[in-house]
Amino acid sequence: MKRNLDWEDLRLFLAVAEAEGLAGAADKTGVSAATLGRRVSSLERSLNVRLVEREARGYRLTAAGRDLVRHLEGMDQAAKAIADWREGRPVRRRIRISAGEWTTRLLIDNISGFWTPDSDWEPEFLADLRHRDVARRQIDIGVRNSRPKQAWLAGQKVGTVQYAAYQARDVPAGTELGWIGLVEDDAHSLTGLWLKENHGDEAVITLNKTSLSLSLVRQGQVRMLLPLFVGDACQDLVRITAPIDSLQTERWLVMHQDERHEPAVRHAVSALAKMLKQNPLLSSGV
Image 1 (cartoon, rainbow, N blue to C red):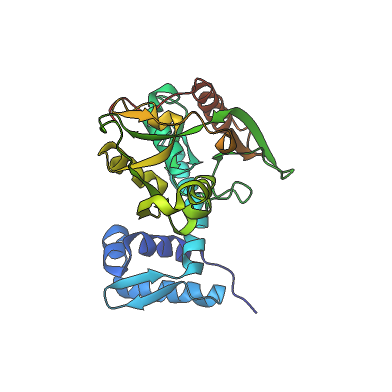
Image 2 (image 1 turned 90 degrees about the horizontal axis):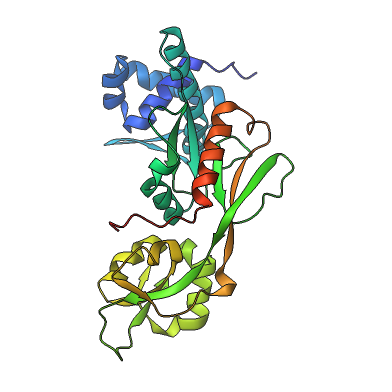
């Protein structure tokens, strides 16, 4: 028969995971390293799953451990909100916003257009699409490239994203630069597939993250596809193609049906939508 979960075990496990070991967690929590070790082991027995690999330099989370941490982050946020409420401090909900790396940078560069310190919510930006699930409430708002299909999700279209090829403006006329190639997950994106099909044999530098390409393009080393909100923001870059129709995607804000009317979520969605519908660029300092 499985034991009931001990919430204190969960809290202490989260501290160990964030500190990547017992010593740092002991400093943070005031609980001895020996006791923390016992509590983590107790939690593993309760769940019947290994959460950490014990190594000489600390603890390394297993896949199950990483999954549990993502669930516990919401619990930790709720606990802090309750503590603020108990102490009479203003309670502001943290809104977790997930987007691709380019879009996350766009949001951060334009944060004053949708958020101020006196808003009734606080933003948390997560530039990782693979492990952030709106349906499971791992995030509050997802910036996605299509309308949500699940009945329990709601969506609001806030524009489109176009792509074109760019190179540095000061590249001498007649110079034929090579292209960037993409590997791993980004190779299967629309950008990666277009590059492989159209310029696969011209790739001179390969990357596993599209967002790493900007510096190389600005140095005049290569050509690359960029979203217009990135490339057009860089005065030292020039388009070498028109916007490519096959790469155009929609931009949607996606949230859970049950959460979209909650005041903080509603205010965040409204502010984000207003800003994104203006088709902002990255900041001029890119």
